[in-house]
Length: 189
Image 1 (cartoon, rainbow, N blue to C red):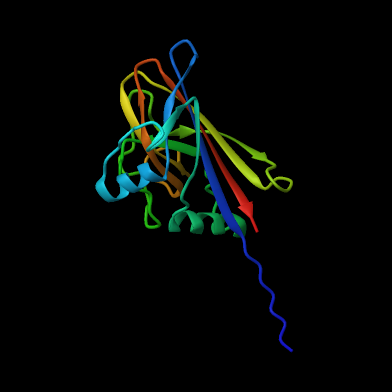
Image 2: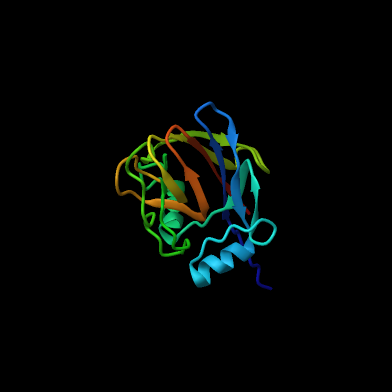
């Protein structure tokens, strides 16, 4: 008789976006759906048609992708073979969908309040005690952008290892807007 033992660990990441005007009032954003993602992937178009390709809301929550380098970064953290914790959130204007081979954002914003920076990192409980890490960063803009991507990195400056990335329907920000990103990564079995 053979005894087989299996242990499987997974990562589930979600990103919540909230947009505010200069007075702190919430602004609606377009939350895309699977039809939008199909149109984006195969035709590279960002069509925002309510009820067909998504809906307007004050907060958008979507799953993200953990690329191959992100999986390696997590393994390094678990094994203690790195001293570079993931602490930064970056945003960008890239439009190519997230893929396993990603190592950076496609087109990271580096000016006018959209620069990568340290996030507030805390441990949370989702299913079991302490199974989720949460990063929160608020970007305060002094310019105008159509933000379309977000990622977690281990470095507050240029470069670094990309732990997770997400591409989404454009979030149009103007001078004095602020965009709050809350990124959760849950360890699952």
